[in-house]
Image (tube, rainbow, N blue to C red):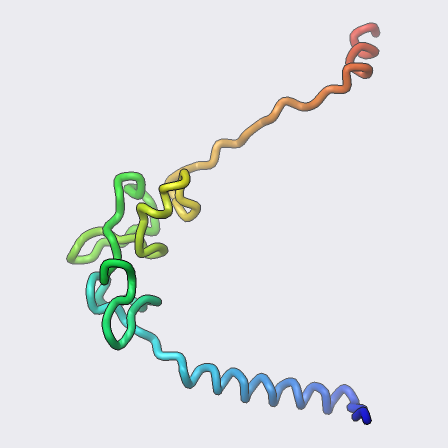
Length: 123
């Protein structure tokens, strides 16, 4: 058995579903504000028990982070607004969020077909 719906009924059902789903989802979301290092900043790792990040708080920035626009200064020190552990972002090379590093444009040598190159040289 199949139910055929016209476009208006289909749209009504979709919007009703969205309203129910989004409202139910938003009821359980509680925004947690950092109370350890970045006081007043919303934090993903905060819970009712405190900071759930490794070590119980965010780590201060490293030397490589100096000059980045994503560094914020708090009374307890300078911290990254993107990552709770900036040293981990720099372990495998440059941080992908760093704003103070310009990516060097790599210009690879164009592959040349030797047959075409020899024809060009003869003209």
